[in-house]
Picture 1: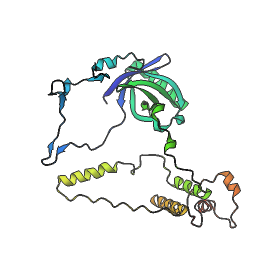
Picture 2: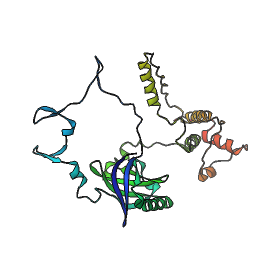
Picture 3: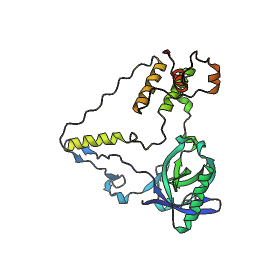
Length: 302
């Protein structure tokens, strides 16, 4: 894999030269802009306002516009040599438990590859330290024209660098929070039963695939072969939520049927809730009793 950039991890007095390598790849289907009457390809043209003529891409640079309209040109070499400690380094500033990082702050990841035999030993040392402590490194680094907050974590035998959003880039979630709503213990147990039924251990299952790209490729193939386009499935009409418990029971049943399981739900009943509720008059098998208690015997209106 080609390196995007060469940097160095710096923690304490230890320096690890690394190459930044893309950790992900895109399988998107790309389109070209075309002129509809004749399918001719439409291209961008770059016009210099000062000379009023088209210029080649190789002639284009970048500059900062001053308030008075003047342009200050900035070269790639000048950006590479900014008077910034993180211009060519990934400066580790702290370590945190993995679970304490809010996932909303984590962005795209890149693999960090040690450069040369000299870098291998401190690289492995850092990787094992993070792994054994179950921690991630918080770092500052510069990439793509700005200084970024970064997260270093272990994946397999490699260290991954994720860009992270700064604290002031995260909006307050209270703006979208719903108004207060009361849910019953039975509804809570029913929801937890549904979560248990749908729980998985890995995202490698067959259902986790890009079906949008598959469908788009089907359309392209059909048009290329002058066949009839595949029909789009009709979406189910949204129903009105009248009985939450009945909806939960149906959801659990469907999820279990999809997995080939029987119609008994797994339920979490907190100890205090178990003690507060009366014991059933007739003793039932433990699993069955929990499922019935979670989903209720009668519909409840909401």
